[in-house]
Length: 501
Image (cartoon, rainbow, N blue to C red; front, top):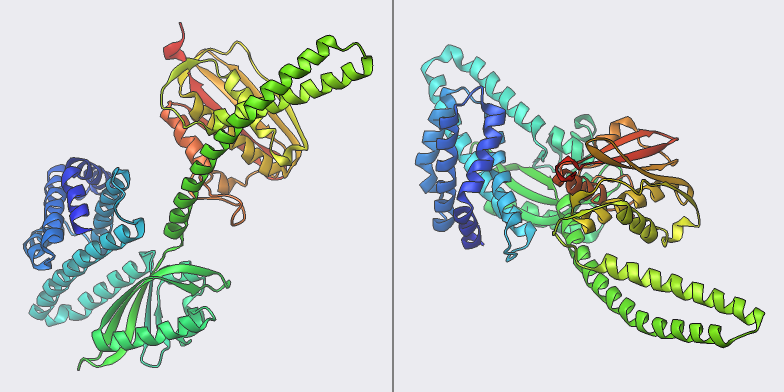
């Protein structure tokens, strides 16, 4: 894995550098100059490559000293340093995710990067602490003040961290509980302090055996890491977590407890499961297209035979029945055609089209959903819409996603209106439902990846996020107007002025 990540850093050096620089310029332009930021990020990536290849953190010492001199001169706090390194971690992770190589599991890559940045930050903190202690030794009167400042900085870090940071004493009682722990598990500090560490364990034998193993390893080796396990929240939910455990020593080095850093692993695990599921769906889509093709051939033969019989038959009753048979054959053929079209791998080839046909295709697909029996569809489509330059398959995906979202909102009983129109610059498509509506505090989150209000197993939180990304790519917008209890309107706005002749 070291070789893989080192190759990614080297081959994507400039893109990682640009991404990191951009984030730091945005957040620290009032404290660091552009040249300082560029020098730091370039030195950092080179150091990371050297660390990964040689697996010796001593090579980072000179880099850390130079970094400390730069940041201490600009009075940057440990919390700000942590944020600066997090920006770098994000830029590297983005390059790895965009890499065509899928040699390693996402979980393993995340774990490796977390270890790398935790070690860098820990060693930086040691230098920071050592320098501060030397300063304190020079002036005894400043000792109390400096200690208070350090404690406050540590408290700020603990409270700002998204990770759960806990301390358990040698009696297995909680003696420290961070805000991150409260966020993940739901317990406040007052509810936890003094309670046994088993409070967070699911009620299964294997977790109590795991606790004994943690205790033994912490006492014996001073440190251990568990990449994937589970813990229980206040609500009783079982969540996937990752643990970093460190021995808490007395002045004589004896075990007096342990510190535990817990990261919520649920979203990463969910992402991995969704990737696996998407691969399965892709295979099913190909299979469905094949089956649809095989159905289409005999349907064509049956349709031809019905037409022959119609021409030769003179019985009125039989003629009516043959008409019914022909209508149903045509209906099946249409379903098969649309299934093949929707199962076809999406193309990235743009074309100048009039989007009314795409809207009609999306409606045709959604109308086969089992929930539409009591749903009324009302359409008011402008057949003379100006043409737009877009990828039809991707636009179809947007319409289907939003229509399915509307079906969920009305719970299979209500009205969905679809209308299209244009002005001098844009074409508009509105999809309106009279369903449950969206609260104001949720509207701004609906396009976030993995955000969903649906029950587990009923939605991934990706449909609207993907739709938003597609429309933005074509310089358009998706606007939402909604009122709880009355329904929602999703308005898609696409420019056409560049293609309007």
